[in-house]
Image (cartoon, rainbow, N blue to C red; front, side, top):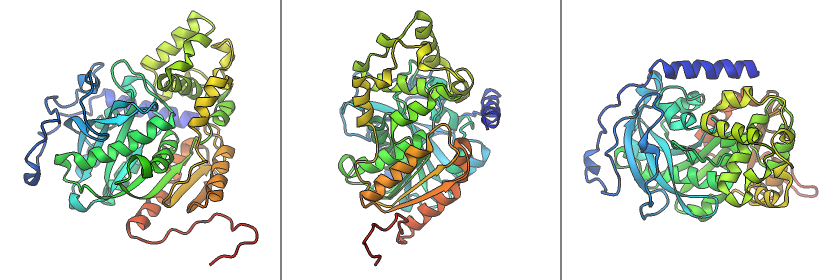
Length: 426
């Protein structure tokens, strides 16, 4: 399975390098929304293919005043490869959001608007991407624009269904990246505020009160669940009607334990960097055992995407980098507990799914999340597939699409949680 993923990413990277990026058309403005807010900076040109530097992604300092979801800047982009470009118009945006410490930050992303429907009636999907890696070149909006996003088939399916799609890059993707990989309290707001940005971009022509769906897989599955959990308090105005999450890293400690010493250890190193960026008091550098270890993590942060995370750290363990295991220390465990799902309900129907052969995001902790959600009285549809983690991203897509279509149609969601002992079904 690793060879399959490596080959897939290699093909995508090669496609990007050969210049799939074309100059985007001039930003179309709907006549009904010709009055452009002066708060949105449209002075940046179209994305430059394969550029190491792109000032669009550098947050202004200080950040402008405003509310979460307000757009700082916007520019036209491409919706993906030629098939996607036929389906949708696309815009890259930078918007205000909130970091894991509750402070304002700036996040980038892509808004895709289907061409075949009336945008003003289109549902909006807050799409949380899976792992792409910490380096600036791994930014999801850059992958989409270059036609190299590995979850593009799911995006295309949503566009064909008539849904606008708001894809967050998550926090920290710029020329000197400080991404907060796997940190739920950063990812949840990033997803919800991408939807707000989509609603507020005049060129998109979307409703300000659309039906909202949230979905994601792997890192994105965790982000989707966090967004669903946080929506009632963080974005109470949003009409969220369903949440889908697959391969969900719900319990970060249990996920970390399974990654230790495995072929997928690179994901654990990436997570340690991400949590340290989210919570500077964790002081990851103080645990490093050598200058070589520090250099390796610095190089990962600057250069590595998913292929490198899989390829360069196989079979390694924390003992090769740290004087003691960071994620087992009290300060780290406290922050990990804050970013563990399962204690707060999601108040709309949820579709959760997991591959039983998953060796990247431990299946047992995903199954435990399902049990916890059922115990909270949530409306949960739980499904398993006899596949590994990588295959699960495609295997679950048809069921996710059906779940979303049913929610948009207003059909009742029927939970398959077990009936508690002594209870009767209606």
